[in-house]
Length: 194
Image (tube, rainbow, N blue to C red; front, side, top):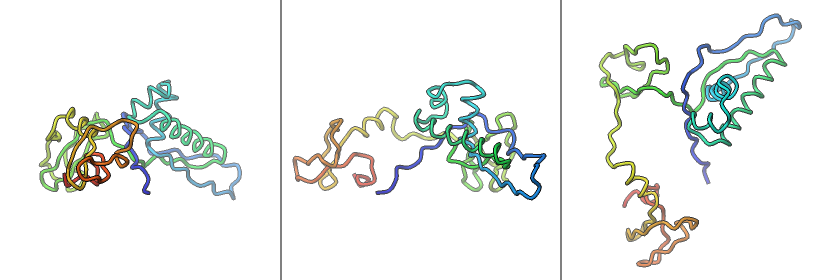
């Protein structure tokens, strides 16, 4: 069984620096190393320690669950403690993130990008350097209400019969009353043909 896909973390204010470097090493023969702090870990620290949000408020800001925020926050504090105690350099980069800013679509290369630095105006596409881009507005084929409603439907992959999902009972344990096959949740990879 493959793990559940990682949910992207929303970053409101990206870091203004890319890291810290220690100075004044008292042991000259020691090569301390590097600690990589992910941008989502930086954001958790910023929200909880700088903005003084509680974990619930910070998790809502980052669009993740509170237990996930707590794990990210604990990892960030452990990395910073390691860097301070062992005199390691801190580099802030990476992570499964997206920035809370406008999105753009390049008409030349077809890429989608956003602007992490909200104060600076975007002049060219970061991929192909074209100036032919515009604001990206997603086209919703179905209203959000109908997409939510479809998530609560069990469908038979054999005959296409649909029935409302009974909460607390997995769809795969439901039996189709028409053809006696096991049902699946609508809009999952198993039901894409219907």
